Structure formats: structure tokens, C-alpha cells
Image 1 (cartoon, rainbow, N blue to C red):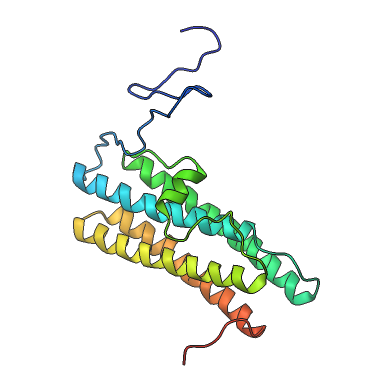
Image 2 (tube, rainbow, N blue to C red):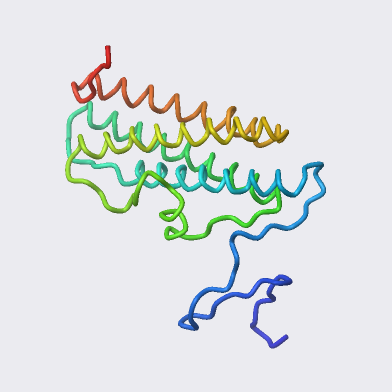
Length: 195
């Protein structure tokens, strides 16, 4: 190996800048002897990648929240968004760790995220407070739906570790954040009740 050149893991090739399309296969997985069959691991990895992409989108939406007002209520909302951003970052780490533990390769770029998330591109911000927070609540709803479906499938296939992560961390956090955000916005008259 030449000096200054990074070693490549077996079977993985990296693209040099400007050298054409990337050749790293993010759908590949390696065998990890953790008592789960290859199909179960592959299915869990695929589900977790979708949940991870939605979580990354939520994290980015919280990071890019509008900071237009100057009143005390706007400062509270700003602090709430910062808190939620950091909590989503912890869930991103937990999901990425589980994907690696199952033998998968994590999504690596915002392009990967955009291809996998149903919430849409987080870096196309809508104008104003109300559309942004409406989109944020919709992204939470999408993430909650993905987490529930993935947890149900993981339970059906006998993957209790993935199920526990999805129920105990992803679902619990998203439901709690929706409750806080919707409650805060309802106090400002920005969210309607569905009685």
C-alpha cells in the first residue's frame, strides 16, 4: 500500500473525487452470528434504514426551524426545537448502531436519506412558521407509522432487539415530541383539535 492511501475494507471500493459513480453497495450486509437468520437480518436492516432516513429528516427539520419571532413564546419554541433536534440525534445513533450490529451498511448522505424517506426533502424549507411546523408534525406522523410497521414486522420475524429499539426509543420519542409540539402550537392557536 502506498503511503498516505487509506486501506479499503474487503470487497468495498470507494469512489475517488470526480471518478464516476460510487461503487459502494449500501444494500450489502455481512454475516453477524447473533442468532438471527439472514432474511430476518436483511429485512430488519431495510426497515431500519427507512426509519433512520425519516429520523434524519426530522432531525434536519428541527435544526432548520424558523426563528422569525422575538417574543417569549417564540423563544420557548426555539428551545423546544433545539431539545428535539438533540433527542432525534440520539435516536439516529441508536438506529445506525443497530443496522451495523445486524451486519448492514448505513445510509451515508442526504441523497440517500431523500431517496428513502416519505417525508420529503428537509432542505426545501416552506416559508413561514405554520407550514414548517405543519410539515414537522406530518414528518413525525410518517416516522411513527414507519416505526410501528417495522416493529410489528420485527416482532413477527422474531427480532426482539429491533422491536425493542423501535418501540422503546423511536416510537416513544416521536409520540412524546408530537405531544409537546402540538400542545405548544395549540396554545398559540396554530393547531386545530380533531374532535
